[in-house]
Length: 279
Image 1 (tube, rainbow, N blue to C red):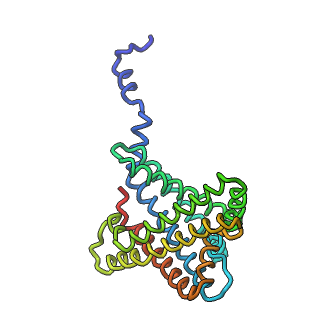
Image 2: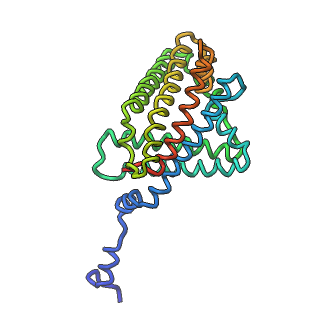
């Protein structure tokens, strides 16, 4: 006999149906997802620490590719480097996915959603890049930047886009410097009850944020100058920006200070993995 729609077992099956939106929101709120996503900050810290070491090599006259590709290549050359790259890839992808998952939650302001979307896309891209190097399929970010700049410089719209990109990087640089100098980054964190940890978080952020800002500012200026001069070779990415700083008067000293600042920023990011508010 066919089951009646009013039969209790039928009603139970109807009520037991899963709402995909509710399930997605529940997953986005899951504390395990949040804890695993924190690994993305560790991955970012490892990347910046390696970049800081490479920048110090450049500052002292050594040869190194001080950019994302150079940092990942240096990591892959270390013992267990490939395993480390895969750990970083997983961490960055998890943080990217967690950030995008937060967009599903109600009550988020437009500014929060834009920030989450930007963070999600940046970390997803970083995760895929870590994965490419882990698979032994590296890319050269300096060559990519130069090639893309060369293509864009062939048209008026492309040149305008490069200048706009440089301006955005300068604005970001100002924001990073302000956030470090004003200690606004502390608003993103849960305060630690341990004095030595609080001291490390505070001062690593105060030193690290401006250093990151100076790198972004130099990169932004490089894009603008390269576009004005019509020379894509000048738009060499972060490596080109750091070497441009080195080539100025007292540039080696300045670049050495930036290298130390990047390592300080890496320490802050690793501490942030533990104390970030994630809300």
